[in-house]
Length: 229
Figure (cartoon, rainbow, N blue to C red):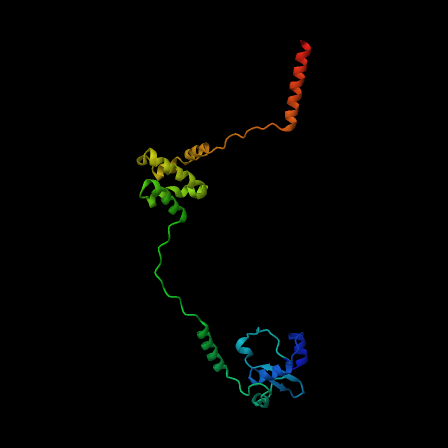
């Protein structure tokens, strides 16, 4: 490409206040690019490792810019003021990047033995309701029997009916109450539970207009009865 710092700044860094010519000198000092003047005076930039990292298309048109001469290739540019006078070689840069990557890579986590999954909260609560009135719970049976109900109706709806049935079984006969029996008759128990807790019918109160109309009717009836006598 042509070595035109002003044009490159407009194309690459149009809004930055920087000196692109100094940047190019840094790259040349690091032997990443080669800046040279052709025989016709054209200033040219060559990327030294372009073919190593890029694979142009076989039918790509060849560059019209002149190639650098042997003197240009062997010429070493002076160090730029305010920058290091020497730069690491490509192999040294790769080695340093590998060392940095190894330092930044966290160590693998320690292998720990798998922990036994905790019992679900609703299973624990169901066992607590059973043990409170019926003694030692059958955790496996309770969880297996109630799981379809919990998945269908949620535990918040199953829990009060389950606790009520456990309490009734403790007084009527625990030997006839099982988790499987509760699951099979859940809809019946649910209807019975709601029937016991059905709120009473609201008391009907007479509004003021209704009271005035009733009093007027009663007065008219009394007046008619008095006129008839």
